[in-house]
Length: 229
Image: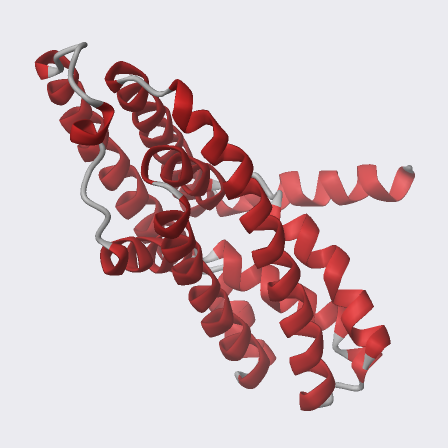
């Protein structure tokens, strides 16, 4: 069991620093809304991960392979992410014009609706079908090492997600230190940056759906580069 835990911890640490929409939105939530709000968001992300792990583990390999590479799902997820980012950005532009520079920061920060933040984390992770592909790859890679035993796999994934959450808590606490430097204008800038990144990630997802062959070509080239090192 100890070996299974030690195998999962480095992966959880790596997962926490994977650059994606969740990474940036988590930091933005921590800076603008605080620790509890960020943890509510992160818990939603983890629940989505658990859902994907269960789907990847209990479903047939052929079914998962067909789902994870379905261009329509990439396009659908990309459109949702792109639309959400665009709407948020436009709202922030309007809010920026109405800001009083002398207004208290607490009045600019939106209400901390923890349930909404939880759902935001869950859905932001859930619409990214690439996350399912990631967990399937992890199961394919590490499953044989654990003889696909349910108990050992459960311990391994618990270690992965535990290390992921612990690392995220550290990131959130560090990001929270920036709250002392916040002004109403800076809050809008942080949120705008997060919105622009969501738009970019949404466009990337849509491009992966529109040009699946090019996506596979790039993936193959990257694998060749890794093998040549």
